[in-house]
Image (cartoon, rainbow, N blue to C red):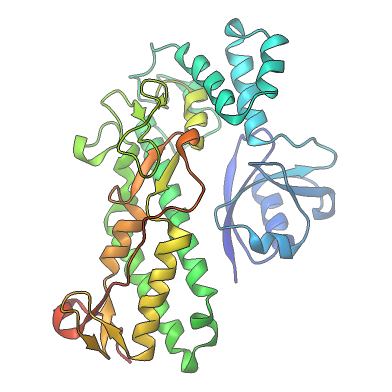
Length: 358
């Protein structure tokens, strides 16, 4: 089964989306879209985040959809995301950094200290162009982006949509590789999961992928930033605010460097997608498949009904369960918060029930 990935070159000048079933197909399609005039055998594929080389289908299969890869032709040297962003800041803010001492200090500290260094250079950025919006007004900000992105707001909306698509495809891949999908009798499990995914996608599309979250010109109740585009960290998943008040802030509208660094900020699921939400969805659909489940509304046992897709949509894609956080506040351990099994009987679901009956 094909999965969607992102691929770019070592200079990060062009990012493309590729749907591929195996490593050979991924490299072959990437070569064509990136315009590399070399053979597949002359190329190597790396995970952008940490520089891990991907050289077989087995390892590729373990990576999630929307993983960003670097495709290198010939003997070109791999540069990880972190090295790239750091070098970018050093080159553009050379008046603020001593290349010898500061670089040595940077590369020998831990991740928290490294991002404090990032924050220092962000603070030194020029505010003069922050409120400019058009590509023609601030062309440097748009360097490396698609020509179709004409305003900063449009570009930031696209960044949100990319993240939301990533959550959708992660959910889709997990459900469609489950035993219920692959091994169910008469394909009924497959039908139930496909229907759920269709309903989920329709809701997401109707909400325009929540593109307003990063758009500073959207209504205040629909965005995560201030009027000027400043974002503040929401803190650890179980905290009401960030412990680094005044430090964990960023304005990706101000400069290209901040726009790039903003990619390291996470929309963190308080109730985790992989550990809790997706397993709950599977349990809900299994109840329908087996003809035995409890309705969350009337709390009675039933045989026929449906999944309350809206509830899972809220947990996967909205601020009800998402929190924008600085990488230091992104806790990767297990969260205590849990999802639930949202199945509803015919009577409670009413006319909204679509195609979940056997």
